[in-house]
Image 1 (cartoon, rainbow, N blue to C red):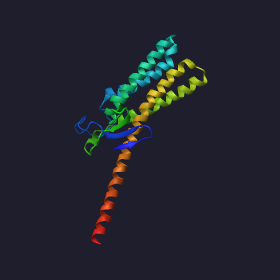
Image 2: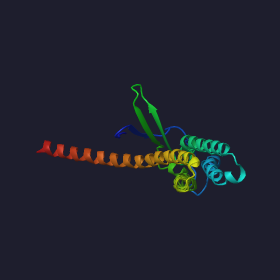
Image 3: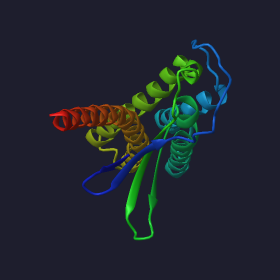
Image 4: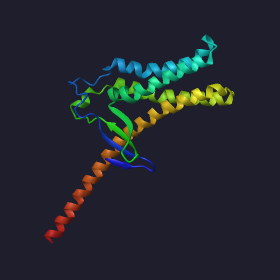
Length: 205
C-alpha cells in the first residue's frame, strides 16, 4: 500500500515473503537469534561506554571520536539491515527512482497463525528496549555537553542522536505502518460490503 507524505513517498510492503521461514516452535521467552541479539546491543552500548570512559583511558580526543563514530556506524548498519529483520521481522530503507524521486519503504514480514508461534517475546523486548533507551541517553548527553560547554564532544553526541534516532524513527514507522494497513484494509472491506448491499437493494427495488 502506498502512502503519500509531504516530501517523500512511503510504502509498506511484506518482508521477504519466502525468506526466514522456520519450523513451528513454541512462543516462549527463548532467544532464537543470540548472535543478532548480542550485536543489537553490543555496538550501541559500547559507543556509550566509550563516550563515558574514554577520557579516563586516553588523552587523544581524535582516537576517542573515531572509535565512537565507528561503533555508531556499525550499530546503524547492523540494526537497520540485520537485527530488525531477524528479531522483529521489520526493515526500512530508501531508494531513488529513475526520476530522482526519493521513496521510503517500510517492510514488515507477513505472519500467519502458525508462524506467529515463532515470535520470541524475549527478542522483541531486547530489540525495542535497546532501540528506545540508547537514543534517549544520547539526547541526554547532547544537553549535558551543551550546558557544560564541551563543544568538541557535541558533534560526536549529535552523530549518536542522528544515527540511532534514524533507526528508531524508521522502525516506529514500520510498526505503525503495519497497523495502519490493517485498519485501511478493514475500512476498505466494510466500504465494499456497504456498496454491494446498497447496489443489491436498488436493483431489487
